[in-house]
Structures are given as C-alpha cells and as structure tokens.
Length: 240
Length: 242
Picture 1 (cartoon, rainbow over the protein chains, first blue to last red):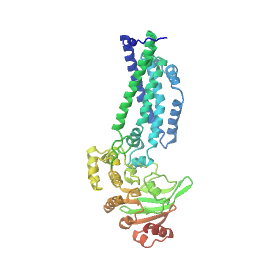
Picture 2 (cartoon, helix red, strand yellow):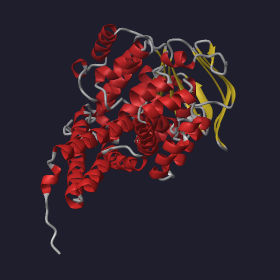
Picture 3 (cartoon, rainbow over the protein chains, first blue to last red):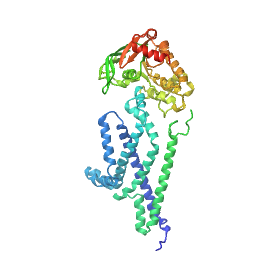
Picture 4 (cartoon, chains in turn yellow, blue):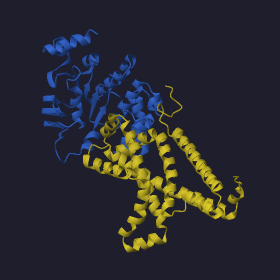
C-alpha cells in the first residue's frame, strides 16, 4: 500500500478560499466568545468573592451549571433548544443572520466563562483580604475597590492560566462544526470530502491551529510582561 | 470625636470586646496597647466599620455607626486607616496609590490630586518616590506612602493598626517621626502600638487593654510611672526591659 501525497490539493483557489474562510470564522467565533467568557468570568469570579451570600450563590450556580455539562451538549442546546423560545421576529432574524454562529458563540462563551471565573476567583483569593479593606477604608465603594484595585491585581496574577484557557477556547471552537458553523475544522473536512485527501487536508488544519495557538501564546506572554506588577511573578525588575 | 458606649463584640463564641467605654476628643493622640489577643486591633477596626459590633454604640464625629441612614463610605473617607502590612496597591505607583481615592471618591481633578499628593510625599519625607512602585520601596517608605494615601482624603481622624510592627528596626524611627509630626499638627489619632517611647513622647492618653477589656485609661506619665493594674505592670516590665 502506498499513499501518494498530493499537497497541491491545498493550493487550488477553492481550497485556499475555504481555509481562509475557516480561519476567519474560527478567529471571529473565538474572539467574540472570549470577550463573553471574560466578561462573565470577571462578573462571576468577583461575585463569588463577595461577603453577600445570595450573589455568591447565583455566581456559583452559574459556574457549576455551565462547566459540568459537555460543551457539545451546550452547542446543541443553544442551537436547537434556545431559538424556539425566542419571539418569532427574533427567530426569523437569527435564522437569516447565521443562527449557527450566534449559538456557537454563546455556547463557547458561557461554557468558558464558567471556567474563566474559577481562575479569576483564584486570583482574587490570592490577594490578602486587607487589600480590599485598605481600598474600602479610603471611601471607595465595593464596586470601585474591585474595579480599580482587586480585579486589576487578580487579572495580572492569572495571565498564565488565562493563556492556557484561551488556547482551550480557540481549540474548542472546532466543536461548533457540529451545528454547522463553517470554521476551520469544518472547512478542512470539506476539502477532504471534495478531494479525498484526508492527510493533506487535516495536516493543513493541524498546522493552522498550531500557528494560531503559538501566536496567541506569544501575544499573551507580551501582555504578561507589559502588565507585570513590579516585585511579583512575571516581572523582570525585582530589585529594591 | 470618637465615642464607644458599652460596646461588645464576639467572633463566633469568642468575646473579643467587653463593655468598652471610651471617649476620644478632637486633637487627642490615644495610644492603645496590651498583649496580643487583647482586642486592641479589633477596637480600632470597629471605628471605621471594618468590623461590626454586636451590642453597644460607636459614634464618630457625632455620627452613630448603627444609624441605618449612615453613609459609611463618607465616614470612611474622613477616617484614615493605616495597616500593619501597608496594603499599598502593588500595581500602582506611589503617586497613583495616593491620588486614587481623592479622584474617585472626592472627584478631585487629576491635577489637583497630584498636587496634593506631591505635597504629602514631601511631608512624609519621600518627595522623590512619586513614580516608584511599592515593591521598589523599603518597608518604611511603603508605610509612609500609606500614611500619605490616608492623609490625601483630608481625614478628621487617623487610625493606626500596629504601623511599625512589620518593619525592620532601623525603619521604625522614620515612620514614628512622620506620625509625631502629624500629632504635633493637631491630628486626632488612635494608635495601636507597642512603641512605648512614642506613647511616652506623643500620646495624650494611654489605653491598656487585656482580654477584651480596657484595664487602664490614663495619662502616659501616670501609666509609665505607676500602672494601677497588675496586668499592666507585668506587660510594662516585659516590654520595657527587652
């Protein structure tokens, strides 16, 4: 048995267009979902650090609910189960404007938001309680103390695990192909289907994911250095 | 300025403040001392509502802390608090640490806030450290920035919770000097400290606590010359003969 490699299938205008569209869709769904995840993660992570028990419980319920159900199930849920619950005009609009993309983004965002929030909570807990007291003692409100002091410190502390989770989010965007989002994995499968060149198509997909992830990791490493707190993890300058 | 009336506080089953009655007038410098676990830190943490009490009444500048209509943020803005561990914001420079609350709480312009901050940094003796980050300052310098940060809100009273206990010995003096200057300028201060030299020189009154009670409340001369209670005598003999 000899397999004849034919890399030229990747160079056809059609294949290149599919791959480019795939990359663009993967980046778009990942970026939007990342923003949703970060916003939800910050909100839930901060709420879980409050003294006020009801808010803490709401945030805990969100986290447990969303992180303990498989992402694939969430994809199906947001695509098949949620739209019929919406008012008819909204449904029509959604189906005209890419309900797959919207559902995929929502599923990815809320799922990873639950995971982000756990990291943000860990970052907040790493800060001594007296830091919050110091901020409150100057007359700042709890919300101001979180926004101006606690979260800026916590977010800086968790850049390394946040990078890791960001890469997971990007890779998990491939699950959206199951509800028909034409992202990168979807497009490599399409090339494979049309050319019967599974190895070449999937190699291209693999390499593109690798490049995307390595790029993100580098960017995040820069962010980490740029915002490092002097004297703490990740900072270059620690001399007194 | 500050009044405790029959205040009691529990941490769970632990009775940490017992029947506290204390009155502090404007301009007084009151040193609170006593063995560890005697409730002295809890006492001053109650003054700006960092700790809640279970019975009794605390009033600051005529405002009762139990009043449901109390604006706790406004009260805290007028009550400077200096912590043992400094608690500067590590991601901000000394200048940014000081201007944050004046800009966000008092709505001062950045220009006005920075002008005041620069004056305060000069007043605490580190005018050249505005751009330094906390990690690049010595402990004594950090604590002086923390004092400047509290003063930037132009408080009516300053609370110090063991401000020199986390410092190397040679840095204690510079912080105490700053506090002494503040007292000379007429600031009302409650200082929890073991620095008996400071108490002797600066305090208008010394409050000695033991097991959640105020055991003595007297002039420093009287306290050091002839402590009334046996517990205070023991405490002083240990702390002064070190």
